[in-house]
Image 1 (cartoon, helix red, strand yellow):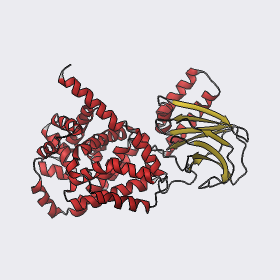
Image 2 (cartoon, chains in turn green, yellow):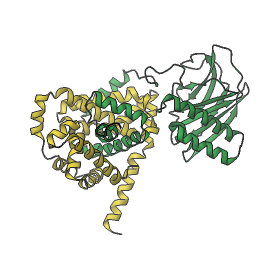
Image 3 (cartoon, one colour):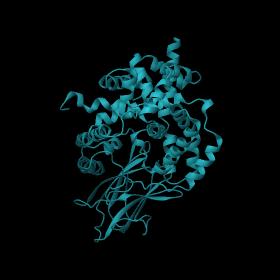
Length: 255
Length: 198
């Protein structure tokens, strides 16, 4: 905002319509977007407008040719999918977590959210929880969106090794956040890993971060679908692609 | 109840159908888990709009088909990165489609070629009007486009349906860059309010 004509905010419309040419201007706006929550919201709204315009542009006379379907389905079957995490992200970061907010505010949000969930868990005063919720809202988008969803379910269960896992689940968002309290400390080289166990597939829902005073900061998992069970296992330090030990927790999710 | 009222309520339910389409979100989540049937279902729901949009931008059927294939494969390949909290599945897919179509326009459109394309532009608004007769979607979008100023409407349709950069739009409409980016943004804000996008 040093110079008025360089105010990147006004480029949100052109950006949402892919009307910025590749290069420094687009790069600058993309950087701006990662720091500007209101611009991000604006771009999303504009993209929904664009989607309406896209649907309005298609009509029966421009149906895709039938042969395309077979070609695409055959090619898709031969195409390997990207792993869930963006390239270059830290290995220690939970695989299914896709936080869109910068790392440091996210961390502080995580700590705040941990206290919220723990406060709920131990039945602390409603007002205090509410204040903290507001604090989380301000600091963290992803988890606060989850916590502020109209219909979240709070689930809590002991693991077979002791300690309690608490889950805040939003069926509508297909997301959950997990915190734990009092899980036994693991020897170096081992880590707790969360799983979404579906009917046909089990996918990693992230590694539990190290506990602070017995509590682990929340892990956000996305892509929760009907029939999933949340599992927790002990795995080698870098995590596993599939569970290698017997789950110490299996919590069916009411999605 | 005036006819306008009943129109408004119909439009509202159409809006909810599109954006409240959690079923499509769930399908995409299943695609992310490698479920081929879910991919097939996503194809059947979205290949039409994807192809329609690309065809509108590129015009050429063979190229449109090629880009549609690219887009749908990309959807399958990157479904693991889809985040329903950040927007609906239809928007996610059509954003990719628009972006790829525009990439194609830019890769084939050298500066010289652009002159030719410029000559090819009919009044964008008439074009939109032409394509908007049958469906409710089109009707809604057309009404909202109609409420924009001429400059807002032309800027948005040239950028979105024409695949032009805002610099090119400024050249075509012989207005300043600053004016174009403001018109696009103001126009989209009006469209958003008119369409009832949150």
